[in-house]
Amino acid sequence: MMRKKSLLALAAAGALVLGLAGCAAGGDNSGDAGGDATGDGGEGGLITIIVNDPANPYWKTEGDVASSVAEELGYETTVGAHKGDANTENTLIDTAISNNSAAIILDPANADGSIAAVKKADAAGIPVFLVNAEINETGIAKAQLVSNNAQGAALGAQEWVKQMGEAGEYVELFGAPSDNNAQTRSNGFTTVISQYPDLVKLGEEVADWDRTKGHDKMQSLLQSNPTLTGLIAGNDEMALGAIAALKEAGKLEGVVVGGFDGAPDAVEAIKAGELAYTVLQPVAVYAEEAVRLADEFIRTGEAPETEKQSFDCILITAENVDKMTAPFTYSG
Image (cartoon, rainbow, N blue to C red; front, side, top):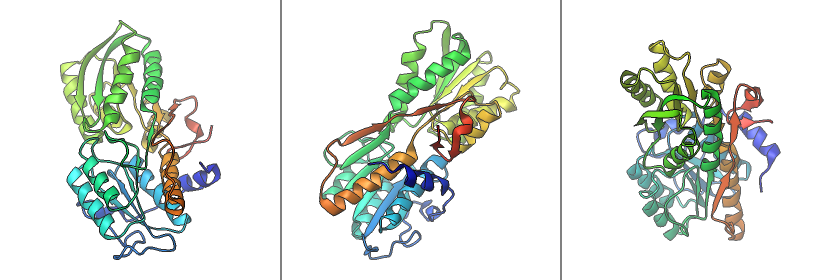
């Protein structure tokens, strides 16, 4: 199903602006990215794409790739952002329904809180294809495409343990509790790290995938645990915020920091020797695949045989970081 040549071209267009800023206050930006008020769309109709927060390059890439693929296939697109708020997401779904969308590509705001919105779209006859995060119900979305978070967490934790020398005191930054990915990654870290008794966890803070919160939570953790030698984070944004706090305190040297996502800033931090590694989520791959599955359903009425599909992650370290050729794209 995946088209590698198309994907490489799309990844190179990662800086494409799709009018996401119009959604920052929780509205929709129909028309900003090519859709019209009636939702008639082009030859294939309108595909509504709803991401979390385009200020994060991961989610921006998700929206950029999905929109580019949809337009390549002959659809009009509109891109909205819920910023993790289920009420905003619900409003965006209502707009997608009123605009007679041919399909919805959705990165859900909440594993439980997004279920009602997906059901509403399904009841209106609009197929929903989820990307990046799952909901805690099957049979209402046509597909749920996510990274293999357990596999990725194990990859990252194994590298982190290696760079820690299998010993030391550490803290963890946890993502948004409403997102199942946060717990899955944390569990994956624990499964690996618990095998090494000389690695002692001093504390954990929730930083909601956010760089500023990662910075502030790291400041607090440093004050309580000045002897820490390691930090493992659920995503790159939190890790990068923590690195900033460590640098401000003059304590980055000697502290092993691990991330997760494969974000461009994380790639640069690895090159600078500040971030030990990141775990690349193939967001460009499954954003493209979601749109192609939607197109197939629109044309044939056939949904994927397997609703929940996972895509393996790739460990990025100083040894292979130069193979990152575009945002969230690995050429190795």
